[in-house]
Length: 104
Length: 166
Image 1 (tube, rainbow over the protein chains, first blue to last red):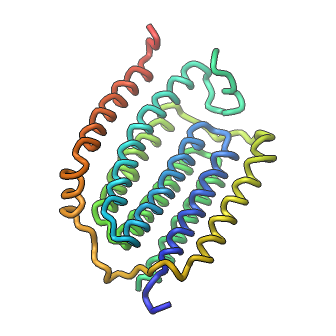
Image 2 (spheres, each protein chain N blue to C red; image 1 turned 90 degrees about the vertical axis):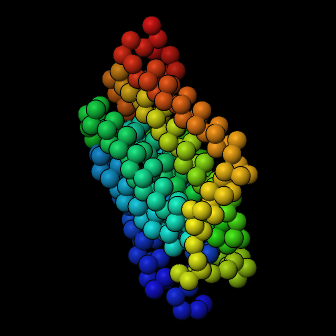
Image 3 (spheres, rainbow over the protein chains, first blue to last red; image 1 turned 45 degrees about the vertical axis):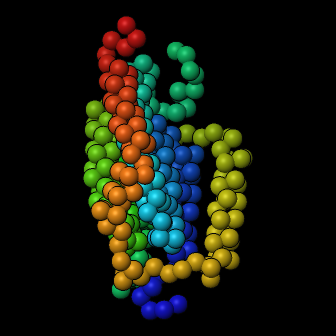
């Protein structure tokens, strides 16, 4: 490895690690809002993969895709947090163990 | 130089993600998620994605996380109580995640020599390059996202209203 250079696979490995941590957070977290944060972490990890491959293959469209993922994530966060507020109003809790029914 | 920067911000990102998992209060998790997103912005910059680095800070670390912290404070969410957790997660989830990570890591390490390297002198994809593709080839998807965002705003307002369903 040349001095001052980082192999692209390190970026991909970092992204895989972050994604895994997101999944683990999704599984172990008991508060709905931190579960939601874990999903955002996974989205970010995937974005890093997109940017790395865009750099690797000099493809601008990879970066465009990340841009679209960001837009969709923003929309998803807005709707998701609104649903979260609605759930909290209806149930008075955000603990996922107590929110296991679709109907009240 | 690149190696040092990469190691620093990769460690920041991983430490932030680990802290997100370990903290019990949602506001601490939210703040560590901001650390992850900001270090990812630096990594984007090192990969030559200047527009995305800025968008990452503004959209993710800025707008989305403000929304998160706002909701945490609005609902006055306390510490999460520790429960036994779900059995399906223990039996299926964690082994599946471990296997997934092992497979991806082994593939990446095996294919390492096929990948190129990243250095600071690679040059950057300027915002002009990006916008040329975005507004020439992908104008319709771009305009459609504006509709998506509009619908999302309306949906958020409708869902969070007090007289819900009336």
